[in-house]
Amino acid sequence: MHKISKLAVLTSGGDAPGMNPCIRSVVRTAIYNKLQVVGIRRGYQGLIEDDMYDMEARSVSNILNLGGTILKTARCLPFRSDEGMEIAYQNLKKHGIDALVVIGGDGTFTGALRFSKKFPDIAVMGVPGTIDNDLYGSTYTLGFDTATNTVIEAIDKIRDTADAHDRLFFVEVMGRDSGAIALRAGISCGAEAILLPEKATAIEDLIKNLKTGSSNKKSSSIVIVAEGDKNGGAYDIAKKVQKEVKSYDVKVTILGHLQRGGSPSAFDRILGSRLGFAAVNALLSGKSQMMVGLEANHIKITGLEEALNQHEFKLEEDLMQMAEILSI
Ligand SMILES: Nc1ncnc2c1ncn2[C@@H]1O[C@H](COP(=O)(O)OP(=O)(O)O)[C@@H](O)[C@H]1O
Ligand SMILES: O=P(O)(O)OC[C@H]1O[C@](O)(COP(=O)(O)O)[C@@H](O)[C@@H]1O
Ligand SMILES: [Mg+2]
Image (cartoon, rainbow, N blue to C red; front, side):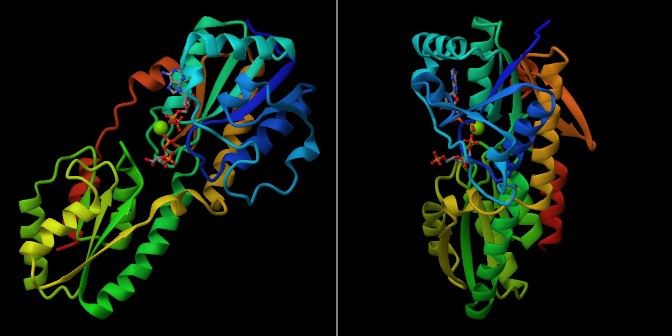
């Protein structure tokens, strides 16, 4: 069993609103339990470059409302190599760090699992932080709620102008491999169609559906396209559709990185606080190579191996069907 005295925390991969409340929770729960705490800058990059600093309770004052991450984040290529991992390990040993909380997504956890298998004397606990909501073991990941609300606010505005001009808008949202934001935003904004990476949509079917909408006196239409949809980006799809659907003037909006910013929602602040608290307590109880999550409003602890193996996103067919019916 791991007995820990000095804990480090990092954020890695795409930033997500809610990471700051989680960092605050990790730091203060650790200090409450008489642990020393170190913050690592820019995820695994800081681990390799020895870019870390001691944190106190006041280091995380007034950050609950901030988007992004005070620790900064990065996508770090060198950590994928054995040499990079060895340097990271030596830096942790040098500072006497014996436990690591990693806040990130599937890539971050893949790295954490490999690292932990190579160096099992460092206890590792994952916290799911990604707007993509694509991890097994937690119904929601940090940032997904805020990002979806940001998308909804933007699409509501687009709907106003689409309606005023009788236009058809293609709105591209984030999610290279995940349609989670697209599906929730589609239901919330009454999209006429939702295109996801997890499900192939034939352009001919989309065109038929939009023509039916137009003949059913729909004055405007919105199609949400997740960036990873297999038909290509929103611009390509819009071009193909405009050729066939003459009744609408077609426009495209790519929402891009604004989806990742902004003050975390109440949901993400509470989720971040709960998961950070749970992560430190799990480490204190001797657990390692695991991830803390929330399911049915209870903390659930899942092995990193299992979280990654079961990772395959299950398309929520029932929600897709409902969205189609409600948009007739
Ligand atoms: N197979 C791997 N081995 C080691 N490290 C990895 C691996 N996959 C990802 N990582 C590390 O995790 C970081 C974050 O992963 P990424 O997929 O970019 O974001 P996320 O964690 O949000 O899914 C990568 O930049 C890399 O440093
Ligand atoms: O900011 P980048 O590096 O262009 O990455 C964009 C990707 O990051 C995300 O916003 C979040 O993904 P991760 O959590 O896996 O990093 C994806 O939705 C998007 O495809
Ligand atoms: Mg990811």
